[in-house]
Image 1 (tube, rainbow, N blue to C red):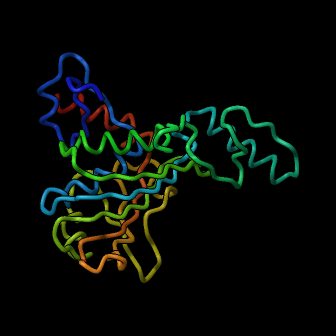
Image 2: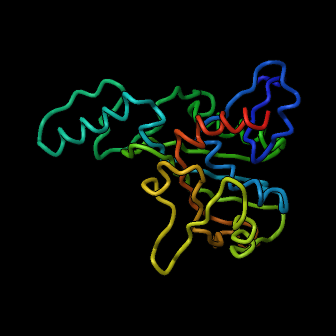
Image 3: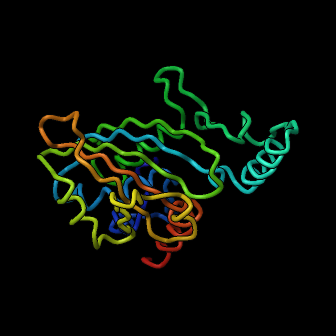
Length: 234
């Protein structure tokens, strides 16, 4: 969050690279996966507010957490006790608030604060209102995010699909007839962020809000791939 250190997602703000002084920051994995599909929308109809709920995989906490999920699941199915060591709560068949420090003043944990502040910095828009709830779920790889966005002007699901159809780094997976939408199982190993469940937010009578769901590989676009893309742009 240092003002003189670029925080870059190449599909969004590659121009920020020109201001580096030797260090370029790679954003938070949840922020990358959540906002990359939102940028094509923001460019044509500014997003004023975001409400995000993340479903974060074990891969975000490293190889040891992935192994703890495997071993604890095996123990649970075999009826054995398992003493968790890597994460603060039992992981098999469970989910819990992201294991970062909670700010006593705001009630938000560090992961949620990162998503808010990094979104504003990457978009170059400090006025975006962002509220995030970050949850660790028993998935090995690939984070998912449920998003509700509110734009300046009315917007329809058809307009959103058209904006995302050929957007860089994004793949539409939006098939209501087959109930086929983004899943971490499908996103694992893919460079693109999967986007679907695109629908009007019926709680907004002004028609300015859209709900959608995304999944992206935390080890690829959420981390290493984004760093490689930065190097390629340089």
